[in-house]
Amino acid sequence: MTRYNKKMAAIVLLLLYMAALLGSAGCRPAEKIASPADKVDLQLVNANTAFGFNLFHALLEEDANENIFISPASVSLALAMTYNGAGGETAAAMEEVLQLKGMSLAEINFAFSELNSILKNPDPKVQLSIANSLWARQGVDFFPEFLQRNRDYFGAEVTALDFDLSEASETINRWVEQQTNNKIKDLIEPPIDTETVMFLINAIYFQADWTKPFNPKKTRDLTFQLSDGSTKQHPIMFREGEFSYLNGEDFQAVSIPYGETGRLRMYVFLPNHDKSLDSFYNELNPGNWKTWLASFQPTEGSLGLPRFKYEYESSLNDVLKTLGMEVAFNRSTADFSAMRPIPPRLFISEVKHKAFIEVNEKGTEAAAATSVEIALESANMDWFSMTVDRPFFFSIVDDNSGSILFMGSVVNPL
Image (tube, rainbow, N blue to C red; front, side):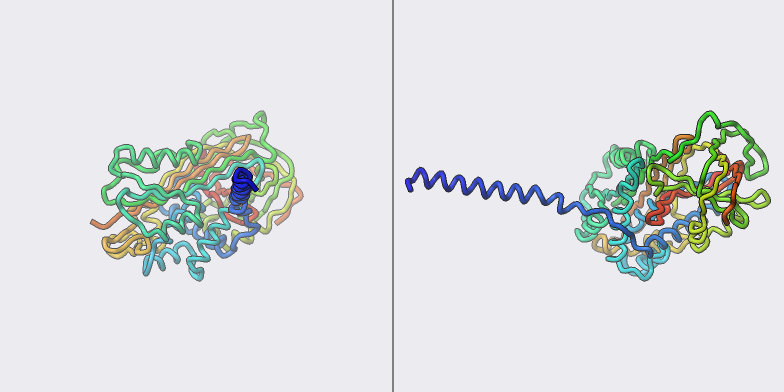
């Protein structure tokens, strides 16, 4: 073989080798994309449900006469990311409040990862997006293992940011707005405190049309009775047909499906005329919730549902302390030693939650965001008629996993 032929053969072999490498590299992304989980750990679902109801009841103590709307999923995710950096009594307190006792850190992270997976693309005609991020003060180091766990199991974007810049809060808020279709704004208030070294943020966005929309021509203004006994005129949408319905002992409830598959649904619970919303709340607990959801039956009937749209904002510090997480907010005793070397001590300075919902004839749009700010120390009927013309409770649930994405009360539809 001549020197020229040997050279050409070597080039051909090199090209074939490079093609093989490129071909195998082209397969890797597909291998890395995990298929959605087909089930989620029921222990986590039950934990999130119990935590969600506990949080909701605690907020009722503060805002009993106001509309409330929260995303238990958003708050759980933000606190679960934070829990990855907790130790000692702080970790134990967070386990207790988040109802995660009995699960190891690895089990918790894996279960949340599966839940994120199963909630992706739940229906061809439903938009549900969940995003997580960690924003660290530039120049402050955190343990790589802590950051990597949040990347691996929560899909968190990790960004180092100069918190002293005037536009730092705007940068974080822009990310939240992008993840929530511009529904949640100004989650982080400027200027960022000099003690703050990290924000752990969850953002969730939901938009879906009803499987069978309400006809706007049937919407009419009716009298809505407010919780203080007064009344107001408000648009109420009407639709007749088959619903998933429950005639409870002291309430009526209906389930309204979204999208093509009906996997995601809104559950509306209306206390009887002689009962108050407060009396319903006395029965609202995980045990009854499980029983109720299993008791809905296909029933023909007429439904009248108010159009409503409102925003809700709350600092969750006091309610989380009341639920048992006070140690995590204590700058002298909080233990987040799994985040970075201690001393100096880290503590939670604020847990802030903002949410938005709009319900109309076409469907529902809802969004929520939660920020955890870490600071450094220095029965069946043949026919029913249900007109929701008084205060009521509602939730948006993924029937596949049983996860409550949103829940709220309307005492004054806006």
